[in-house]
Length: 107
Image (cartoon, rainbow, N blue to C red; front, side, top):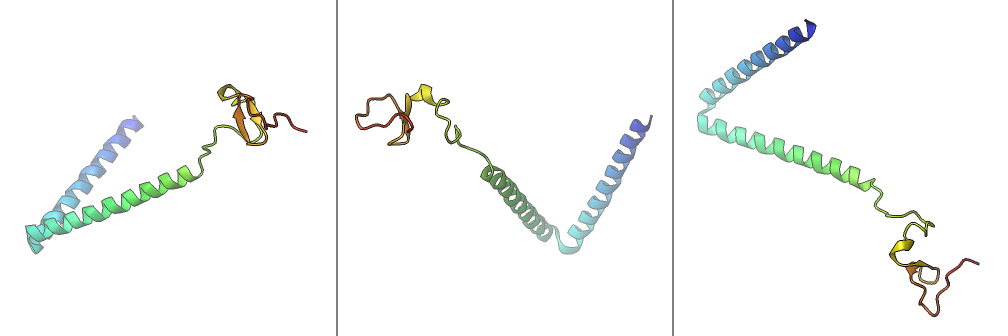
């Protein structure tokens, strides 16, 4: 019962807000002229869109800056061994063991 009342109250508040917003816009459009009102509305919409896009880009940049993009941790050579053999300590890369000057085990 309470859930239905809260939905009705929310809907009533929305209708009241919509009527007040519409009345304000109609009065403003009549006072300054429809073309000036339309230009002002479009400029306001553009400013809101620019601000929201900068906010979204900033949040995405913040989240992506803290992302860990490394495929394997430092010192973990067995995780990537299937891609090229064992770790060559001279080059620091995984290879198949054919480097004649390679160093393939730790001292």
